[in-house]
Amino acid sequence: MTTENHNLNVFKVLFLIKGIFTILISFFPLIYIFMGMFIFNNEMQDHDHFGLTGLVFMVVGTVIFLFLMALGIVTILAGKFIGERRRYDFIFVIAVLNCFTGILGILLGIFTIIELVKPQVKQLFGKPV
Image 1 (cartoon, one colour):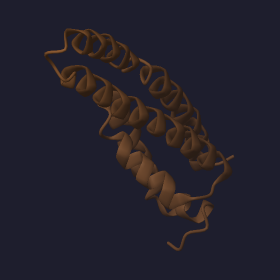
Image 2 (cartoon, one colour):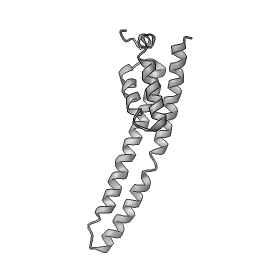
Image 3 (cartoon, helix red, strand yellow):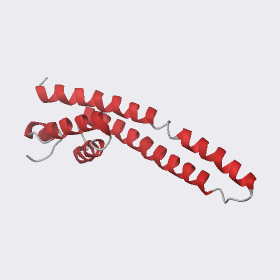
Image 4 (cartoon, helix red, strand yellow):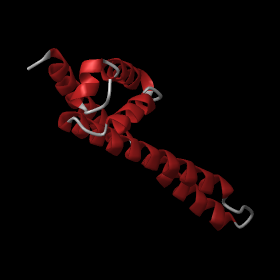
């Protein structure tokens, strides 16, 4: 087993862990959704307000929840593809996207990009050097 294979297997595991953490963190915005429902319900009973504050909480919570859930899923897929040594471009894009998600994502993304641009790794994925 070469060094590149070993590094890619480590990145596979790290992508899977990062994806699972991202999915778990995606459940926190559900608090905003439920809080928005509560505020919306109280505002609608008041009859003086349209319920805009509650709607904003629900929309923001839903958007953040869906974004984090999607990011977690594609991160897990990237880990799977690293293990299979296919979809080089997809893995590269997900590594760049993970650079926007905090310190763990920055480190994982940068080190993955450094590993992916090595000629030996490109050959493993069937890319021309």
